[in-house]
Length: 127
Image (cartoon, rainbow, N blue to C red):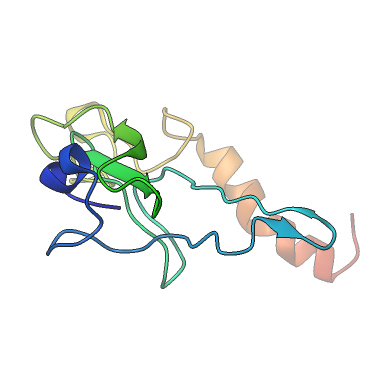
């Protein structure tokens, strides 16, 4: 992965360049070697890469036989947010049309009572 100048010049050196994969053995004993990249904003892996909205990422595959020539791939991630939104609504349930309940509308008291009693009833083996 390189920065834009490295992409345009087909140069894998510089401050913005780092190696994502190395294909030194393209023919493995049990079949061809394949690499995949999962484009996601967050990654649970320590060595994973996070792709941010509105950014462009550049990949090159230089060839030692032909300096200045390479295979190029440009990945543009859509769309940069104009304003950051919080992941969780702020305020008490029902305030400004938001609810802490994932279903949208606030659940009825009977439904909440059933949800609270269900684990107890299972412990007593009533259900």
